[in-house]
Image (cartoon, rainbow, N blue to C red; front, side):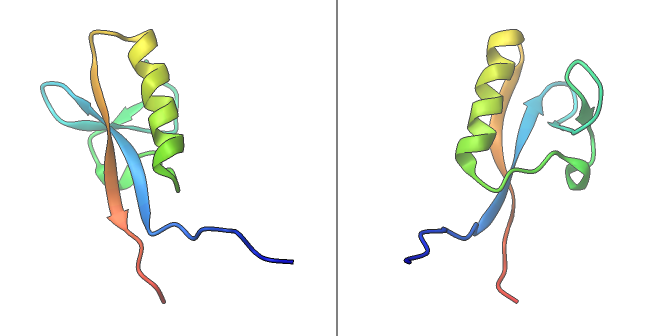
Length: 76
């Protein structure tokens, strides 16, 4: 059986543009946000991050949100 699993090479997060740049976090809020990028909700695929980003844009059309690369993954 052939393994078609694609390994993630980057982690993604969602940036919110406001008075201070912040990122979507994985806790309660409207939606939950953090000023520390290291505390951002992470996604292994850009597609998954983009899906949530689109949901946020529909629910909050006046907010500027976009998918951001959190960090490139390194091989160990």
